[in-house]
Length: 272
Length: 291
Image (tube, rainbow over the protein chains, first blue to last red):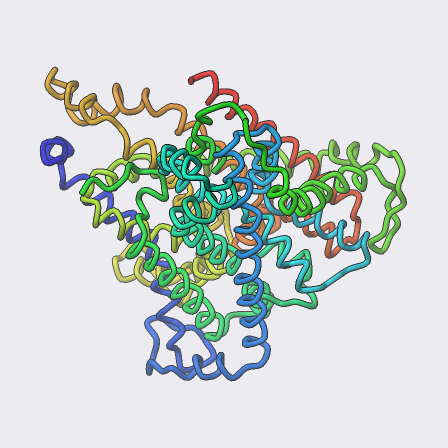
């Protein structure tokens, strides 16, 4: 490791990493800073820093309503995503059946296309059924759209399971459903949780599908933010941004703290 | 994403003995109607007759597709493809060495980077566009810093404009390029570069002659992912750009919510879908031929 690092001209590498870090952090820092503005205008650095707009945000029914919608949609759509992904991932892993692989492809397609296409598809679909502007439309749409996330994490988890455990359980007389419940499920649970977290955070931040599927009646936080963005800047939007940021940071921080994030994202297992 | 899934799925130990039909009932019941039917409907509506006011009559008309060939819309499509390609090249040029350096950090430092990157990746496009609008506006941020440094005489607004769209789009996709490079770069066999080093290759030469050739598949996949992502970007071009910077996704949304022409919007979406799917299939094909 050290030998390689010394080959890399550490200072050049460090300077490059620092530059990228600044690029990634700068907009976030500025937005967080302007949320402390006192006046309605955005000034940087903020004059007389205050939590005034945090109070406004928390007491405004429209913002809180959007926040509630986003939360309900994120929590339930991530559940839908996991409920779709777990059986598919398990069937692909256990039987490698062609149908299971087809289903995982159908799930994967959602992530390969620009979401605006999916969004219009849903718009037409629910209009045809005459079931327009309902919160369950958004929940189902996000559940399907983000099902590839738990599908990937659960597949990573399954691939680490030693198959001889299954044979052992079967020899001891466990039926397939029992093997699944007592051996497989406990082992992949952390990966299900990670997939749930990824899907939840993505749903919380998703805009175009939420906007087209039910944006007029079920305003989520990103939809509300864009609507107010069109009316000009207010510090309340910066407060909303800070909220998003903290949620993502906390969720991924927890996954990083308790899970093996590098392995979830494709690195080799921890070697310690 | 797809490649990650493919890499993660292990080859089955034995050919299908046990089938699992009951377990797949729920995913089938949800994915076919909600994952596939809307796309089929999109194809049907793209051929329908437009009824002004946001309605349509099923039919078999090519008019909406023919309209796509008009210079105005063909120009938009061409501009979108060009912008996507530009963003893809810039993002990969930054993202590849960036990921390479991060994978060389100790595991703990890597976790910090990953948490930060996943956070940035998950940020709403609305939030990112808003943040860059603030950062590039006249009274706040960058413009003022440039004045202090002496590069500008008085603060100016750096948005809306092409540069603003470009900077924000690269920002949006950079974490995705990282995600695609990370598995292969972190598993990259270091003895290869070490061997090259022993033979006298400098770090730059090692990078160009050893690392790049080995990594050409993830690089290609990453270029395509970014390309497709930018084709679908809506908020960034519409908020940070003037109408001449709008991409095809902005025009699609405009047709839905302002012009109320659903069949034409569907035809544009279909064109976008064909381009995206073709590119994804192409990358899958190239990935397979490598194996």
